[in-house]
Length: 260
Ligand code: CUA
Image (tube, rainbow, N blue to C red):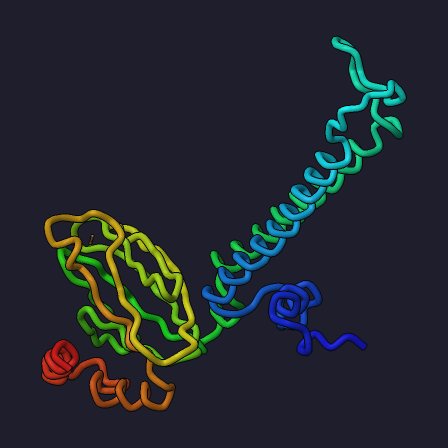
């Protein structure tokens, strides 16, 4: 029996999706989804390009001018349509194959982007971390489930679905973390929902992607991804765990977060 896990990633990931082995049609972080779309288009594009150029070179060579026309080759006359061979079979075949490839790619990319739009199944459960993001001139403010906030630094656990509700305090901004493929408009009076997963602990740069004033280029921050247990520790120590009413701690933790 075919073991999907033994195949190279290029084949295994789409196959796992197609057969539902990943627990749903799509799964994984945004980074994985976009990497896969890129790979699929790269491989198919290379394949189609190779076939087309090879066939073209083959025909150019086969039907090259040999210098000796003995009149045995039937050539179309000026004003006459070439009949070709096989009654347009080649034309039908090439159009047919092209249509199948294009329709398959559209369906594939559409379901992938739908998944990115809606988020994984876990997003409906309590397993994810909800953070409210407010963009303002010129800062990013993050509010955690217990009501505590951080400035310009979003600390999250690795390998967990993070749900963001993004809005703005003054003018239009756009919250973006390129490395994690996150981008959400921050618009006053509106809330934009998005999600992401950071698989590896580390730091990822937050940028504003909407020209929003003189401080736009400096409106950046950091996503700090910690191991889950380190995050729990941080959450307890810096944000006072589940105690949202401790105002003194908030001031302390804010300055610690901003300078630590
Ligand atoms: Cu905020 Cu640009």
